[in-house]
Length: 61
Length: 324
Image (cartoon, rainbow over all chains, first blue to last red; front, side, top):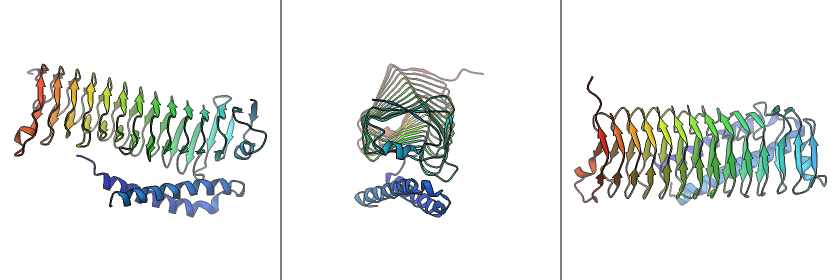
């Protein structure tokens, strides 16, 4: 069966949101000396989500 | 240029940011376990494993082992990366990185991720048990993904995500045992050559980009069709591939203007080449098709009530299964 690009983007947005929620919940477990780096990695996850959402908007999803 | 020794106790991100490190320097990592996130903020650094026991362990808490954001020409070579909660190596923007000979196992996201990045070499890495093994996304172009082994990923092995991920080369990789597709190629004008794609949970190679060339690959024992060309994969060239013993069709084509030449399509459990109802103007030429029951080639476009340009099926070897 052929893939539907809209479904593909929607699924990825849902998955990214789930990963961000899980990562936010884990933030308290990160050692203090690594917190700033983890926060940078977390920002990149949020940036990826924004890019996916922009893509969805451009694709009229 | 200097060679700077690094131990697991070194805060590598802070070291890179300091005046002690300049463009062109080599960071030589001694063996040991590094519980770190490395954020590379300078161009043309070479970060090399000094032995075969340089392990980055995220402890199932840390997100990425390496982050390369808007930098150029960084080499990461010989690392073992495990237990990270997002991507093993995360490339965001930038260009010209060399990601070589790393072993990435058990990460929640992708083994190697490149977003909006160009002209990277991803060579001889092993990725196991990621979500996707290697993913090019958000307009990642002109990348070279060569001789990697990608296995047991929970989604796809190797992927160029949408049409905008164009002009990439995927050569000599092996994608096997991944849950969904071995390779998923949405990018326009990607070259897929000499890969082995076997025993994946669904389709071996899914092609959705136009002008893609698929040459010399071995696509076998996948649990759905060997290759699926979806309706947007206009003008693909498909030559000299071995497509063998896949669980459904050898090739399943939904698109127009393809050229399928000199392939060996054998012992797939359903049809060898299926041309779907809207697939027209394809050339099926000089292929060898053996025992793909019930028929080696089925052109269903002939049943389309609307006009579909004829497919040309010419000079193929078409052998049924031997009588038992």
